[in-house]
Length: 148
Length: 67
Image (cartoon, rainbow over the protein chains, first blue to last red):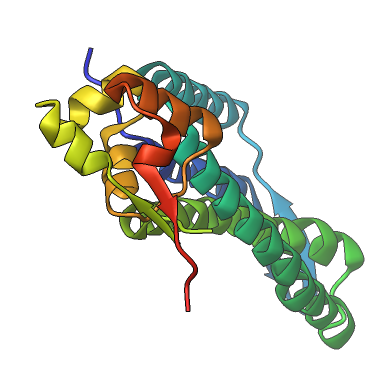
């Protein structure tokens, strides 16, 4: 059985993680009615189930076909995860909190709209970006090697 | 800095990188990094490789002070 390389697997995981913002942007958005900013929820159960099933199938397939993860790969993934954790902290402090401040205080947006919709939009994009960053870091370590 | 003689021993044993990788249970890429000195293996992996070639870990790896 042909196996999928660990790097390719991480890229495909990042692609699967893009389903999260796709679902979020399809289901929740911010609408303007005159001067008011309101939350528009178009939650579609079938879309939710379809994307969820697609993601689960893709991850299951990747798990089955992924080549053996050896100690180099585990350490490389560990390093990539550590960088992603720091990036997530920076992302939260530098992007998410100021963005919420801008959307709530400066634009006088209702907290419900800004808190749930805007924070959600930024978060789901951030999660996907972190998956992409993780894959990119792993590929870089895989190419350059890792010397302590 | 870790210097290694894995390539020398592997070629002497007439093995390919993939054969060595298979023998010690790692990916071929890991063997490539080991041979190029771009990865410091765990003690277990170092001992497994030494066992394949029938030598000691000290024969395979030498540490030198990096100036």
